[in-house]
Length: 319
Image 1 (spheres, rainbow, N blue to C red):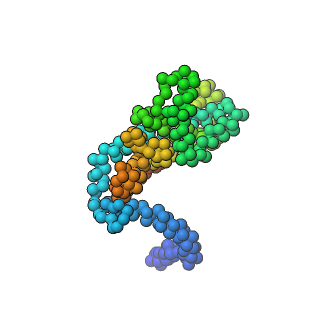
Image 2: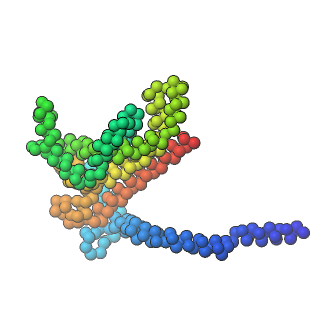
């Protein structure tokens, strides 16, 4: 009797484990829907990524067959003074823009959400307009503003009696990076402000009412309610800033091309000059430039990991 019951249970379990013909058909249909996306991803993301990793271990000028050189390109990076300078400038540029482009948009969004709601649409529109302008146009525009002879900035300083503050903003090695950071902040402020503003709209008003009942002042409500509830949004903004900072190229290339004397050289502009041979008229160094692109990809992946860690902690705190 017992053995019969066991055989029956075993058969039932096997029937449950074996997918029915209908389930198998539905599974195959699902695979068929996903297959085009997988093929597209493999062709345009997977294969270029694998090929780039392979090229980073080769010496190649873009013509002929790449020559496998092992870790030579990466060991060369360690001794390349221009690469080290470009890496340092990229990290500084990313750190400063991440801090400024996170704190300032958050404060402006909080001010608009708290007291300037009637004028909020006007402020949001004005601040967002630079965000719809391409980095190339932005770079050319600010290149004209920073022009030491005909630029608006030096003229304005002269008109208000600050002629001693006039500089060659893009020609001074000590000022060129801060000048580009100002342009990056001007261009990106509106977008990040809108992201924070959307996050503020999602905060439950009863939290502020409870804080008021407890006697919390404006600063305490900001510190204990607003900022903690914006952690997820802040994580997204920080990750976007980190990724955009590490892969910045266009605005620096348009405004300075990495000059003067590599004072504003970032990894993106150095990679471009190596890959297309525009550095002192040298031959293209596709293999070496690809190794730099792998370094940039690694930095961006680290930024994504930071974003996941921040979001996970924010979600755990909310729960």
